[in-house]
Image (cartoon, rainbow, N blue to C red; front, side, top):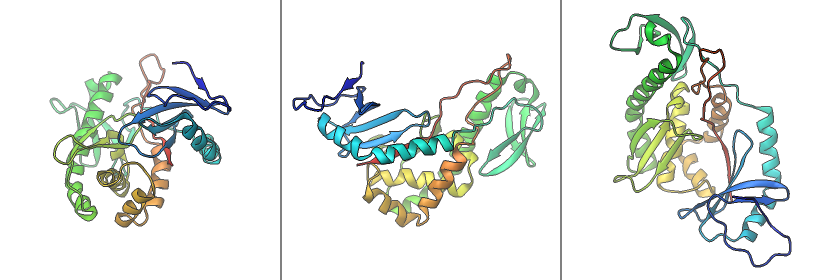
Length: 278
C-alpha cells in the first residue's frame, strides 16, 4: 500500500487501517491495528523499521501527534541501534564449535549418534557426524533440540512465577516467534497460550525467567504502559537491569545463521525489537 502523507491542514482524515504506511515528518511507519489495544505504541525494529501500533478507529491526527511527541525517543533508539548492531554468530557445525544452553557454553562433539541426532551428555553437545555434513539438516535438528529442552525446562519454571504473579498458568510452546523473545495470546485455552523463542534458552536462567515473567504479566495487563511495568517490577524488582542484560546478550545469540555449502551465511528472521507505549 502506498504511503499516506499527512497534510498539516487536513481535518477530515479516515481512521488508520492495518498494514497502512504512514509518513510523519519524513519518517515512514507501518501501522498495525489491534482490537485489544487502547493506547498507541511505537516499536523500533532491529533493522531500523518503525512500527506504529494503534487501537481500532484511531484517528490519523492522534497518531501524528503521538509520533511527534515521541520524536526524541525514536531518535535515541535509532542511535542506540547504530551503536549496538546485532552480532549474531554464524555456525558451520564443526567439531569444537561452541553452543550455549542456559548460559553455559558447550563444545560440539561430532560422533556416531545413530537414532538420537543431537543430545547433551557429559558436558558436550553431541551431534551425529552424518547430520553435521548437511548444515541445513543440522540446523533443523539442533533447533528441534533447543525446542524440546527449552519446553521441558520452562514447564518446571512456569508454576512458581505464575503463583508469584497471581495469574493462571497458560499453555506453553517453544518455537520460532519471529521478532519476539516471547508472546502471550489470551483466549487460546483456559488461561491463554505463551510461546517462547527457542533461542531464549541460550540465555542464563535468570534472563529466561525474565522473559517468562514478562509474558505472564500480559495475562493481567495488555500493552507496556505504567501498570504493566509496575506489575512486572513487583515480581522482579531488578527487571530494568534484566531487560538491559537481555538487550545486550540477545544481540549476540545464535539465531540460526549457518554457513551454507557455497560458503555464504544462511539467512535468519529472528530479531528483538524495542517498544514504546503511549
